[in-house]
Amino acid sequence: MVNAVTKIDQIETMILDIPTIRGHVLSMATMRVQTAVLVRMRFSDGSEGIGEGTTIGGLTYGPESPESIQSAIDTYITPALLGRSADDVNGALQLVDHLVKGNRIAKAAVEIALWDGLGKRLGVSVAQLFGGAVHSRLPVAWTLASGNSETDIAEAQEMIAARRHNIFKLKIGKRAVAEDVAHVARIKAAVGDAASIRVDVNQAWSLQDARWGLRGLQDVGCELVEQPVRARYLNALRELTRAHEIAVMADEALNGPEDAVSIVARGAADVFAVKVAQSGGIKRASEVVAIGQAAGLGLYAGTMLETGLGTAAALQLFAGIEDLRWGSELFGPLLLTEDILATPIVYRDFTVEVPQGAGLGVSLDPDKIDFFRRDRARSLKTVAGE
Ligand SMILES: O=C(O)C[C@H]1C=CC(=O)O1
Ligand SMILES: [Mn+2]
Image 1 (cartoon, rainbow, N blue to C red):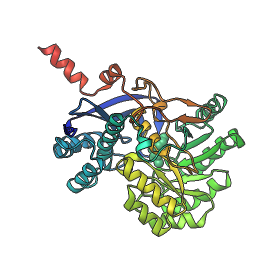
Image 2 (image 1 turned 180 degrees about the vertical axis):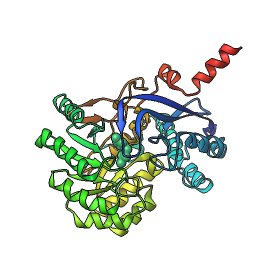
Image 3 (image 1 turned 30 degrees about the vertical axis):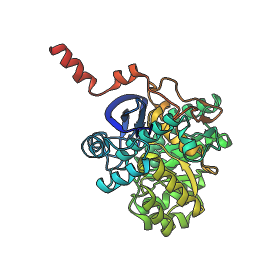
């Protein structure tokens, strides 16, 4: 008997609004809630796959919003994929790239669910599908972004004492450059050699600001500056990369392999912040990694502050990357008041552990999903109105 081909039967999307443990103050927005977009895919053999495509701060970070991610999937991606072979992930990616331009985070959510389903059906991890894990844990940074130097120092000291993090990324760019440099200096002086200090400006500086900023940051012992100027200003990024010893990292400028090629060709960064969501999925992120590696750049596993689900997807990829020189910031679940996984991801000894098991190695807690779903209020009202 010929085995029937497993098909994609159903793709469900949901938006979850989960409060953060404190205000997360970024140059462009203050987050008090993180809005995650989840995908649940059902296949004809009864297997399932789950994925996540999440952004930060509505439309303040980038061109996709939670609502646009959901609508791109429901309106354009799902109709193209229903009925196709569940195991043909590359075929699905090619079709979706043909039919949908941009919308990388939406594509990532669907692609992650396809890999998860495939791994579960084969009984292997997604890391194994990409050639196998070489790490079981990764160094993990924490972001200090309370908006107050004293609070940030106390938070850093607690994290070091608990052996949870000794790499800190400070969110700056909201205040005057000199004030930001003084804030970074205070934190570096407080932690000394016990921690690595880096900053993320989230595109807030002009080139002029950045010239002063990078000089000041370098002088106070900051090791790396992430996306100091607008994503499209590659000439400015190149000038800053060349002019200072402090490492310059591309984040918002790096949306998939094509951007990776442009940045390398222009010499516009020392380090890539590789994000699965922003790259358009695990496969495209692996291509960004390959371009960075081939060009001799440093690599850093970035986050969109995803729940444990998106975090697990990134861990599956980066577990297979040998030289992750700048470590990771895959701490998303720790910023949320509640974890939505049945078994939370483990953080200890300054590292995050790669979940073990088939697919992404994680499953959702159905009660938590129910509780945080944005449409839950609507369904409750419907029930009440009956
Ligand atoms: O990198 C960003 O811009 C987004 C994000 C990652 C960590 C964090 O605190 O915010
Ligand atoms: Mn960033």
